[in-house]
Length: 553
Image: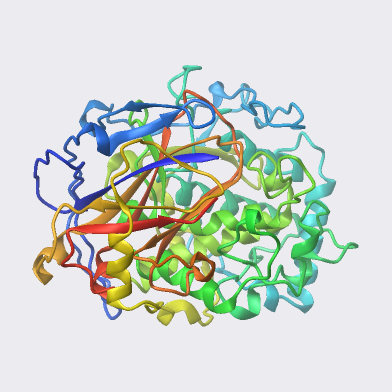
């Protein structure tokens, strides 16, 4: 069960005070497919909204409600720095059946961390290929590397056990900030650290595997689920005799079942839809303009009331929940963050997530944050020589400096923009049938569909105004973070929700939570959806309100 509140905001490059809406300001990046040079500078000013806009559920069940005003200038302007001496037992809360485990790397107290040094230019480029295309010598090298990693002693920082524990430590509150045991701890999910942390994670994992087989050209394959030929779990992971096999996967989701990027376990086991999957990737990558919509909200030491994942992380989340074993109470292995690193498929899944980040930047002109608190955030990893290495976000922003790239393969979702399936009259009729701003917030999401209207900050904006300000639908979600939660958001939709999927333009986006450490003192969760282009496509930009329909979780 989850509860939700929502509000509309404009994100722009100038400051405005609003008495009825929380307004956030940032530039809307350009969408040229020819050149990715240029782009407006970001402005990070945020003004206060009224109580209705920042209502959020707290506590168990539906919870009570409290109001927050989010002011980033009240936060300490400090990047997240991982302190090697602050690692402790992970927070697994009351997750059923989760065995106590120490996820911290070995010998932290006695090992001195060194600063990262880029590989030299004479080091060969590692070319990451789609896993479904991996055959012959490349496949045998991969299986042998994983076999050797599995045979390393559990206390070796390069071992399969310790590599899996990295995700547990960073995703379940093992590292604390500023030497304090109080929240927030170091978190790499539901914020802007998601993409850079996981890029570094698989970078060192890949180099360790290459070192074990003494091959400097070894490259980690990617699970190419954004292409029809790669939407099944790759066959190389399904051979029970192989080092790549993991028994804790969903038995109902084995080949030839297609990965469902819009999967909701509440609706039962169904094979994914190729067109729906392609449209979901389009909406999450090609259609996204602003960095904090793509990457997630900022996360700094000492700062912020809200956590927010970006579209890249939300696109990736079903890969965990769809793959994990439903017979395990926590969905192990892939279905829970503390255990997901135990499945070799995890790293290939994140290799593809990393690939989509590079495509967003190279093909769709996406821009990284310029904020020093993002760029100077740091993490600790053991390298292939057992050195404890400190890395920063800014050091991973250019993959060419890390000496890896992705095989050039087609991206069929580039033009998979969905089309409206309702008429304008039907959309306006749906708007008339719904309640304006429910009086009782947060709104509980359960087995029933929820639909209501939200007033927009402005309507009928000019092309120039839209080029500067992106209209954003902001959700504030109260949920039990140890549970899998998913809901879809539709705009101006008629009553037949059974046909709702990413293939229709009325589909605005989804929220997906992967089971991880619960905490009543944790950051509250936000989710943002860009809707300027969507309103134009639905021919409703001249309406005062929008109609939201939330599919049941």
